[in-house]
Length: 262
Ligand SMILES: Nc1ncnc2c1ncn2[C@@H]1O[C@H](COP(=O)(O)OP(=O)(O)OP(=O)(O)O)[C@@H](O)[C@H]1O
Image (tube, rainbow, N blue to C red; front, side):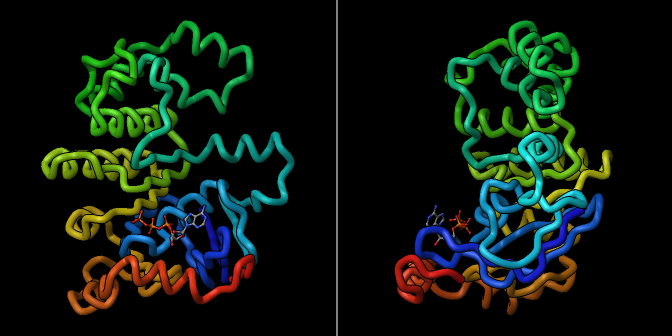
Protein backbone atom coordinates (compact mmCIF):
# COMPACT_ATOMS: atom_id res chain seq x y z
CA UNK A 1 0.00 0.00 0.00
CA UNK A 2 2.79 2.40 0.93
CA UNK A 3 6.49 2.12 1.68
CA UNK A 4 8.77 4.83 2.98
CA UNK A 5 12.46 3.99 3.01
CA UNK A 6 14.94 6.24 4.87
CA UNK A 7 12.92 9.25 3.96
CA UNK A 8 13.71 12.80 5.05
CA UNK A 9 11.85 16.09 4.67
CA UNK A 10 13.02 19.64 5.30
CA UNK A 11 10.56 22.55 5.42
CA UNK A 12 12.15 25.99 5.51
CA UNK A 13 15.21 25.39 7.66
CA UNK A 14 13.50 22.67 9.76
CA UNK A 15 14.42 19.03 9.42
CA UNK A 16 10.86 17.85 10.12
CA UNK A 17 11.22 14.17 9.16
CA UNK A 18 14.51 12.37 9.53
CA UNK A 19 15.26 8.92 8.14
CA UNK A 20 11.69 7.57 8.28
CA UNK A 21 11.16 3.94 7.30
CA UNK A 22 7.53 2.81 7.43
CA UNK A 23 5.44 0.29 5.52
CA UNK A 24 1.71 -0.40 5.49
CA UNK A 25 -0.14 -3.22 3.75
CA UNK A 26 -3.64 -2.98 2.33
CA UNK A 27 -6.30 -2.69 5.00
CA UNK A 28 -3.90 -1.94 7.85
CA UNK A 29 -5.00 0.57 10.48
CA UNK A 30 -2.23 2.58 12.11
CA UNK A 31 -2.37 5.38 14.69
CA UNK A 32 0.38 7.98 14.66
CA UNK A 33 1.07 9.51 18.06
CA UNK A 34 3.68 11.86 19.47
CA UNK A 35 4.11 15.31 20.98
CA UNK A 36 3.14 18.54 19.29
CA UNK A 37 5.64 19.43 16.56
CA UNK A 38 6.88 15.84 16.25
CA UNK A 39 6.13 15.71 12.51
CA UNK A 40 2.82 13.80 12.39
CA UNK A 41 1.02 16.23 10.06
CA UNK A 42 4.12 16.54 7.90
CA UNK A 43 4.29 12.79 7.48
CA UNK A 44 0.60 12.64 6.52
CA UNK A 45 1.03 15.54 4.10
CA UNK A 46 4.05 13.85 2.57
CA UNK A 47 2.01 10.68 2.02
CA UNK A 48 -0.78 12.84 0.61
CA UNK A 49 1.81 14.15 -1.92
CA UNK A 50 1.58 17.72 -0.60
CA UNK A 51 5.30 17.61 0.19
CA UNK A 52 8.07 15.95 -1.82
CA UNK A 53 10.82 14.28 0.25
CA UNK A 54 14.44 15.56 0.16
CA UNK A 55 15.82 12.04 0.11
CA UNK A 56 14.77 8.41 0.52
CA UNK A 57 12.28 6.29 -1.37
CA UNK A 58 8.51 6.56 -1.42
CA UNK A 59 6.09 4.05 -2.98
CA UNK A 60 2.46 4.94 -2.77
CA UNK A 61 -0.22 2.57 -4.12
CA UNK A 62 2.60 0.86 -6.06
CA UNK A 63 3.79 4.08 -7.66
CA UNK A 64 6.39 6.76 -7.06
CA UNK A 65 4.23 9.91 -7.14
CA UNK A 66 7.19 12.14 -7.93
CA UNK A 67 7.93 10.29 -11.16
CA UNK A 68 4.39 10.63 -12.50
CA UNK A 69 3.08 13.12 -15.03
CA UNK A 70 0.27 15.48 -14.05
CA UNK A 71 -2.69 13.29 -15.10
CA UNK A 72 -1.51 10.01 -13.47
CA UNK A 73 -0.54 12.00 -10.37
CA UNK A 74 -4.07 13.42 -10.25
CA UNK A 75 -5.49 9.88 -10.60
CA UNK A 76 -3.24 8.67 -7.79
CA UNK A 77 -4.40 11.55 -5.58
CA UNK A 78 -8.04 10.69 -6.26
CA UNK A 79 -7.38 7.33 -4.58
CA UNK A 80 -6.20 9.03 -1.39
CA UNK A 81 -8.63 10.61 1.08
CA UNK A 82 -7.37 13.29 3.45
CA UNK A 83 -9.28 14.10 6.65
CA UNK A 84 -8.13 17.38 8.16
CA UNK A 85 -8.22 18.81 11.65
CA UNK A 86 -9.87 21.93 10.16
CA UNK A 87 -11.21 20.81 6.78
CA UNK A 88 -10.70 23.42 4.04
CA UNK A 89 -14.37 23.43 2.99
CA UNK A 90 -15.85 26.29 0.97
CA UNK A 91 -18.00 28.28 3.43
CA UNK A 92 -20.83 29.27 1.08
CA UNK A 93 -21.09 25.80 -0.42
CA UNK A 94 -23.89 23.51 0.78
CA UNK A 95 -22.98 20.35 2.66
CA UNK A 96 -24.55 18.31 -0.16
CA UNK A 97 -22.25 19.84 -2.79
CA UNK A 98 -19.20 19.62 -0.55
CA UNK A 99 -19.69 15.90 -0.08
CA UNK A 100 -20.44 15.32 -3.76
CA UNK A 101 -17.07 16.97 -4.47
CA UNK A 102 -15.39 14.02 -2.72
CA UNK A 103 -15.74 11.96 -5.92
CA UNK A 104 -14.76 14.62 -8.43
CA UNK A 105 -11.22 13.35 -8.94
CA UNK A 106 -12.63 10.13 -10.42
CA UNK A 107 -14.92 11.83 -12.92
CA UNK A 108 -14.47 13.67 -16.20
CA UNK A 109 -14.52 17.47 -16.16
CA UNK A 110 -18.05 17.54 -17.61
CA UNK A 111 -19.35 14.99 -15.09
CA UNK A 112 -17.73 16.99 -12.28
CA UNK A 113 -19.41 20.23 -13.32
CA UNK A 114 -22.77 18.48 -13.55
CA UNK A 115 -22.32 16.74 -10.19
CA UNK A 116 -21.49 20.05 -8.49
CA UNK A 117 -24.35 21.98 -10.08
CA UNK A 118 -26.95 19.22 -9.67
CA UNK A 119 -25.79 16.51 -7.25
CA UNK A 120 -27.51 13.31 -8.40
CA UNK A 121 -26.76 10.87 -5.63
CA UNK A 122 -28.65 12.59 -2.84
CA UNK A 123 -29.56 9.27 -1.18
CA UNK A 124 -25.88 8.19 -1.07
CA UNK A 125 -24.80 11.55 0.34
CA UNK A 126 -27.56 11.48 2.94
CA UNK A 127 -26.44 7.98 3.96
CA UNK A 128 -22.86 9.09 4.77
CA UNK A 129 -24.19 12.13 6.61
CA UNK A 130 -26.38 9.82 8.69
CA UNK A 131 -23.24 7.90 9.64
CA UNK A 132 -21.76 11.07 11.16
CA UNK A 133 -25.14 12.05 12.65
CA UNK A 134 -25.60 15.10 10.44
CA UNK A 135 -28.37 14.01 8.05
CA UNK A 136 -30.35 17.15 8.95
CA UNK A 137 -27.52 19.36 7.59
CA UNK A 138 -27.74 18.13 3.98
CA UNK A 139 -28.88 21.45 2.50
CA UNK A 140 -27.23 23.96 4.84
CA UNK A 141 -24.15 26.06 3.98
CA UNK A 142 -20.84 24.95 5.47
CA UNK A 143 -20.24 28.33 7.13
CA UNK A 144 -23.28 27.77 9.39
CA UNK A 145 -21.67 24.69 10.99
CA UNK A 146 -19.63 24.41 14.18
CA UNK A 147 -15.98 23.29 14.09
CA UNK A 148 -16.97 19.79 15.23
CA UNK A 149 -19.74 19.55 12.63
CA UNK A 150 -17.33 20.69 9.91
CA UNK A 151 -14.88 18.03 10.99
CA UNK A 152 -17.60 15.40 10.59
CA UNK A 153 -18.59 16.76 7.16
CA UNK A 154 -14.92 16.42 6.16
CA UNK A 155 -15.01 12.81 7.34
CA UNK A 156 -18.31 12.14 5.51
CA UNK A 157 -16.77 13.53 2.33
CA UNK A 158 -13.89 11.04 2.55
CA UNK A 159 -16.27 8.16 3.32
CA UNK A 160 -18.25 9.15 0.22
CA UNK A 161 -15.04 9.35 -1.82
CA UNK A 162 -14.30 5.72 -0.81
CA UNK A 163 -10.52 5.99 -1.42
CA UNK A 164 -7.94 3.19 -1.14
CA UNK A 165 -5.91 5.07 1.48
CA UNK A 166 -7.25 7.40 4.19
CA UNK A 167 -4.84 9.83 5.85
CA UNK A 168 -6.54 11.48 8.81
CA UNK A 169 -4.87 14.32 10.70
CA UNK A 170 -6.39 14.75 14.15
CA UNK A 171 -9.87 13.97 12.79
CA UNK A 172 -11.66 14.34 16.14
CA UNK A 173 -9.78 17.23 17.76
CA UNK A 174 -12.92 19.43 17.79
CA UNK A 175 -15.29 16.76 19.17
CA UNK A 176 -16.35 16.00 22.73
CA UNK A 177 -14.99 12.72 24.14
CA UNK A 178 -18.18 10.71 23.51
CA UNK A 179 -18.53 11.86 19.91
CA UNK A 180 -14.77 11.47 19.36
CA UNK A 181 -15.03 7.84 20.45
CA UNK A 182 -18.03 7.21 18.16
CA UNK A 183 -16.35 8.94 15.23
CA UNK A 184 -13.10 6.96 15.47
CA UNK A 185 -15.21 3.82 15.80
CA UNK A 186 -17.02 4.79 12.58
CA UNK A 187 -13.79 5.64 10.75
CA UNK A 188 -12.06 2.38 11.66
CA UNK A 189 -15.19 0.28 10.97
CA UNK A 190 -15.78 1.94 7.59
CA UNK A 191 -12.12 1.44 6.64
CA UNK A 192 -12.22 -2.19 7.75
CA UNK A 193 -15.40 -2.90 5.76
CA UNK A 194 -13.72 -1.73 2.53
CA UNK A 195 -10.19 -2.93 3.40
CA UNK A 196 -9.07 0.68 3.13
CA UNK A 197 -5.65 1.42 4.61
CA UNK A 198 -5.92 3.99 7.39
CA UNK A 199 -3.21 6.15 8.95
CA UNK A 200 -4.51 8.55 11.60
CA UNK A 201 -2.69 11.00 13.82
CA UNK A 202 -4.23 11.36 17.26
CA UNK A 203 -3.45 13.40 20.33
CA UNK A 204 -5.58 11.02 22.40
CA UNK A 205 -3.43 8.02 23.26
CA UNK A 206 -6.50 6.34 24.77
CA UNK A 207 -8.35 6.44 21.45
CA UNK A 208 -5.25 5.24 19.60
CA UNK A 209 -4.82 2.24 21.90
CA UNK A 210 -8.54 1.44 21.96
CA UNK A 211 -9.18 1.40 18.21
CA UNK A 212 -5.88 0.78 16.40
CA UNK A 213 -3.99 -2.52 16.30
CA UNK A 214 -0.69 -0.82 15.38
CA UNK A 215 0.82 2.30 16.91
CA UNK A 216 3.68 4.38 15.52
CA UNK A 217 5.30 6.80 17.97
CA UNK A 218 7.08 9.78 16.42
CA UNK A 219 9.25 12.39 18.13
CA UNK A 220 11.53 15.07 16.69
CA UNK A 221 10.86 13.82 13.19
CA UNK A 222 11.96 10.26 13.92
CA UNK A 223 10.07 7.05 14.57
CA UNK A 224 10.58 6.02 18.20
CA UNK A 225 8.56 2.82 18.04
CA UNK A 226 6.28 0.89 15.69
CA UNK A 227 4.44 -1.73 17.72
CA UNK A 228 1.20 -3.63 18.20
CA UNK A 229 -0.95 -1.56 20.56
CA UNK A 230 -0.74 -4.32 23.19
CA UNK A 231 3.06 -3.77 23.38
CA UNK A 232 2.94 -0.01 23.94
CA UNK A 233 3.97 0.35 27.58
CA UNK A 234 3.57 3.37 29.90
CA UNK A 235 7.39 3.71 29.89
CA UNK A 236 7.45 4.03 26.09
CA UNK A 237 4.68 6.63 26.22
CA UNK A 238 6.48 8.58 28.93
CA UNK A 239 9.66 8.68 26.85
CA UNK A 240 7.70 9.66 23.73
CA UNK A 241 6.03 12.62 25.40
CA UNK A 242 8.91 13.67 27.70
CA UNK A 243 9.66 17.42 27.68
CA UNK A 244 7.88 20.30 26.06
CA UNK A 245 6.91 20.60 22.41
CA UNK A 246 8.56 24.06 22.42
CA UNK A 247 11.81 22.41 23.34
CA UNK A 248 11.43 20.01 20.40
CA UNK A 249 10.79 22.85 17.98
CA UNK A 250 13.67 24.92 19.34
CA UNK A 251 16.06 22.02 19.02
CA UNK A 252 15.05 21.41 15.42
CA UNK A 253 15.21 25.08 14.54
CA UNK A 254 18.63 25.64 16.07
CA UNK A 255 20.25 22.38 15.03
CA UNK A 256 20.25 23.26 11.34
CA UNK A 257 21.69 26.30 9.59
CA UNK A 258 19.22 28.26 7.46
CA UNK A 259 18.52 26.44 4.20
CA UNK A 260 20.11 23.22 5.45
CA UNK A 261 18.68 19.82 4.55
CA UNK A 262 18.13 16.76 6.73
N1 LIG B 1 5.73 24.84 6.19
C1 LIG B 1 6.61 24.72 7.18
N2 LIG B 1 7.77 25.41 7.18
C2 LIG B 1 8.65 25.26 8.18
N3 LIG B 1 8.48 24.45 9.23
C3 LIG B 1 7.35 23.75 9.29
C4 LIG B 1 6.34 23.83 8.28
N4 LIG B 1 5.32 23.00 8.61
C5 LIG B 1 5.66 22.43 9.77
N5 LIG B 1 6.87 22.88 10.18
C6 LIG B 1 7.58 22.47 11.39
O1 LIG B 1 7.72 21.06 11.31
C7 LIG B 1 7.62 20.48 12.60
C8 LIG B 1 6.59 19.39 12.57
O2 LIG B 1 5.31 19.97 12.38
P1 LIG B 1 4.01 19.07 12.25
O3 LIG B 1 2.86 19.99 12.04
O4 LIG B 1 4.25 18.02 11.26
O5 LIG B 1 3.95 18.42 13.71
P2 LIG B 1 2.78 17.64 14.43
O6 LIG B 1 3.39 16.47 15.10
O7 LIG B 1 1.67 17.39 13.47
O8 LIG B 1 2.31 18.70 15.51
P3 LIG B 1 0.85 18.95 16.16
O9 LIG B 1 0.55 17.73 16.96
O10 LIG B 1 1.07 20.16 17.02
O11 LIG B 1 -0.13 19.19 15.04
C9 LIG B 1 7.33 21.62 13.56
O12 LIG B 1 8.56 22.02 14.16
C10 LIG B 1 6.78 22.71 12.66
O13 LIG B 1 7.06 23.98 13.19
